[in-house]
Image (cartoon, rainbow, N blue to C red; front, side, top):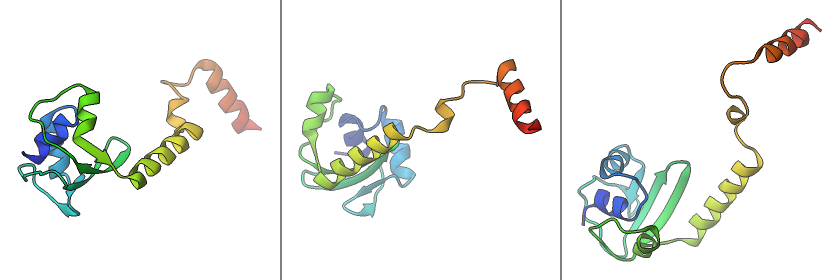
Length: 122
């Protein structure tokens, strides 16, 4: 089975073209080495991938050509313990210290501008 198709079926990426772009962009490593989208995947292979803000280290357990519901897709791989701990830690850090860009929405209001100018004048 092709690597990009397996990543799509395992629901790491929403479409095959996004999976292909991730593999071509170097965000996916198969058995520790860079791979091409058409590289064959077999049970027992180790895949390291970067999807969104998360890094995954998984071991391929089985293959499936079709994209199935998420509970069935999780049966295609097994995540390593280190990867799960690393993802949990990064999720906790994101929860505790959200990015400041989430606080501001759009342009400053008239009240915000007045407060900024008052702060600058003091």
